[in-house]
Amino acid sequence: MGIFNTPPPPLFTLLLSFSLLVQLSLSSSPSIHELLRSKGLPAGLLPEEVKSYTFSENGHLEVFLDAPCLTKYENRVLFEQVVTANLTYGSLIGVEGLQQEELFVWLPVKDIIVNDPSSGLILFDIGLAYKQLSLALFEDPPHCKPQEPATYMTLVSQTQDLPS
Image (tube, rainbow, N blue to C red):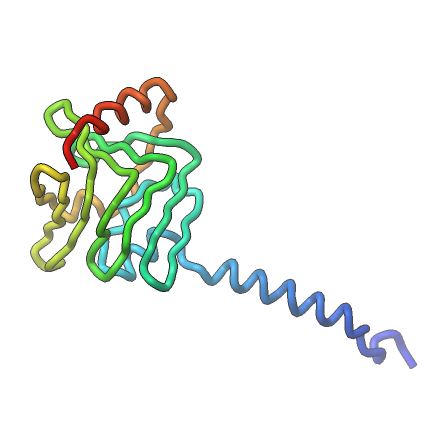
């Protein structure tokens, strides 16, 4: 009787099955950019440098970056190290951890909504006003430059003095 006719020990089979299951579950979760697309939003709303995210059944989304970072769409945008929101189809509501520069003032982005994708527009609620931008600006995830702690603290302190 050869070595290949002997069944593997039960513990070995169990460990191999568990290992494969873990690998499949890890590889089956979509990237944050794929998740945004599946929810009717453009992938470029979040930077390429997203490290990880969690998305719960009730729609709560938490996005993690290695550090706060700065990028530009139409204007400069600052992503904090953690960005949270409620993600539903076509919207990010109650956004925290994202600011947009308007006329040299940093304003918190509160909501991001795509009401009608065929319009080619996306709506940003920046607290004091609503701003419509072209969806084309957000097709591809931008690269985001890490911010030095002193620069980041200056930007954040500017937004803390604003009314909610």
